[in-house]
Length: 92
Image (cartoon, rainbow, N blue to C red; front, top):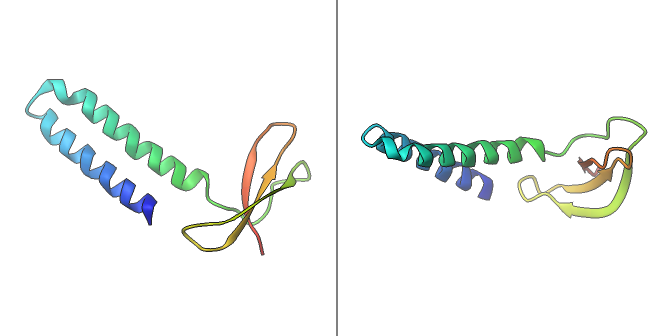
């Protein structure tokens, strides 16, 4: 829910900055910043989504577990010691 609010606010800021930039060329940095907020929110929303299971045998479960705020499902953090990558996997 909070992600949706942040995304809506960032989109509104982007639209407002674009409207202002049509009147004043000095507003383009504000457009760039608002676009970064939109892109960052979308990246976070899809990059940190839980998955069904790790990709291969390189992954190890950690002791980190939490409830996903959006879905309410339990999530386990998996770690790949070779790459340092972390995955958030839905716990059955």
